[in-house]
Amino acid sequence: MIEVREMTTWDLSDVAQIEQAIFSEPWSKEAFGDSLRQPGTHYLTARLDGELAGYCGMLQCTDEADITNVAVKEDCRKRGVAYRMLRELLRAGEEKGVKTFFLEVRQSNHAAKNLYEKLGFQYCGVRKNFYEKPREDAALMCRKAGSPDAKTAEM
Image (tube, rainbow, N blue to C red; front, side, top):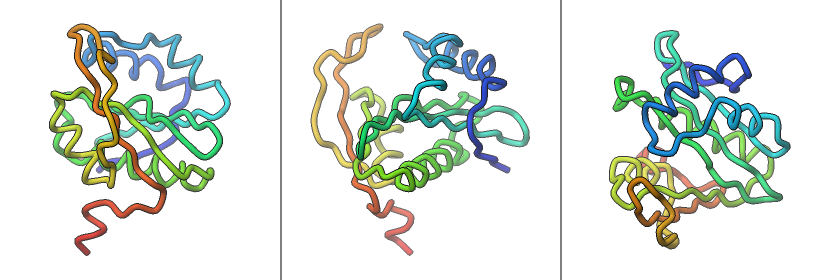
């Protein structure tokens, strides 16, 4: 069972451990804590059978939001964790007045791009040399509030 809820300071050590394991340039526990306290940020965690499985977050500025973090532990992937977290993050953002969501994803991360497309995101540009370690372009993706995701559109 997947439980999605607001991230708290109690989650930061586990979040930082997942971040360290997944990313080549990870955020620190302190960076997450600082971001969590900033106005306009919204972070969620997902627990799978009681264990922290992933987290995601966004930074809102007026009616736009940048999804800054999406991560799921490797052994918890392909079980719907990222989809559930992001659906809740999008819902919460729309409730807060977000009209357009943006995110960047490595050009080579086909699994993530497929997930984002299922959630209604579309390719809207490229950010050259956005990532380091290894250096790579980012696909810029955007989603308008109220856009149906692929699962909703199929129903």
